[in-house]
Image (cartoon, rainbow, N blue to C red; front, side, top):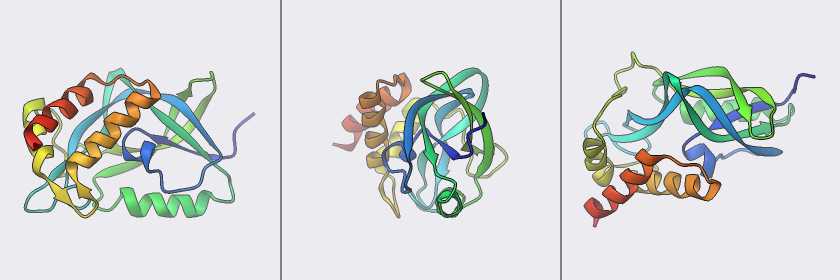
Length: 179
C-alpha cells in the first residue's frame, strides 16, 4: 500500500530544525548521495562578499547518506511544500527531487530531497577539508554563524547514532580555528 503522506528527507539543518509539523520521524538512508559541504552559502550562513558553506546532497553512486525522514499528513503537505521551497530554494542552488529512501524499520518511501545543482555557481564540490574548516570558522549569514550550523548538525548526527567522519573532523578543527 502506497503511503499518501509527504515524506521529507533531512540530512543537515532539517534534522535539528525542520520548521514544519510532522507526524512521524524515522532514521533513513538515501542511496547514491553523499552529505558534503559542497554549496557556498550567500544567504543563511554567509554573504555574497564572504560566503559560508552549507551541506548539500551531492550525487555519488557508490555511497549513501544517513539522516531522518519526516512524514507530513496530506492536509499539511501544501503548507509544508511552500515553507520548504521558500527555505531551500532561496538561490536555486538546490534541485527538488523525489527519491527512494530506505527507512530504518524496513519500509521504503519516496521522499522529497533537496539535491545540489552541480551546474550552479554556488556549487563547490571537492574542496579540501582544511579549506572547508577555514571558511566555516569565520562565515556569518542571515541565520547566524556558519560554525553554529556545523556544530548543531554534528551534534544531532552523534545523538542519532549516525557516524560522519568528515563532519566530526570538521567540528573539531573549526573549534580550534574559531577560538
